[in-house]
Length: 56
Image (tube, rainbow, N blue to C red; front, side):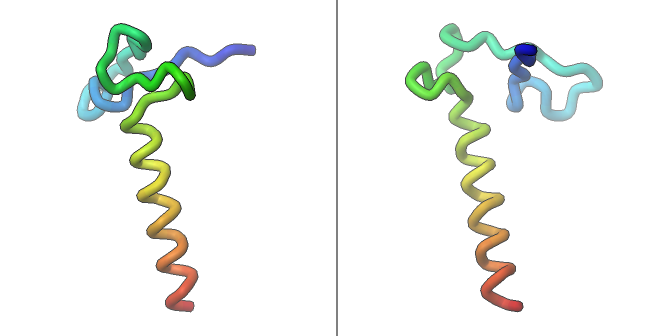
């Protein structure tokens, strides 16, 4: 089952979610078929988790 892609930028702070416009968006990376904002956020989360693991 395919999921509807949600725009993380346009949806932030809104009561309803906004659907990703994919190729019509400057943040959409066609090669990986994902949003650059999602990729950057995911990397930041992984970096934070790695730093927390180092402190333990």
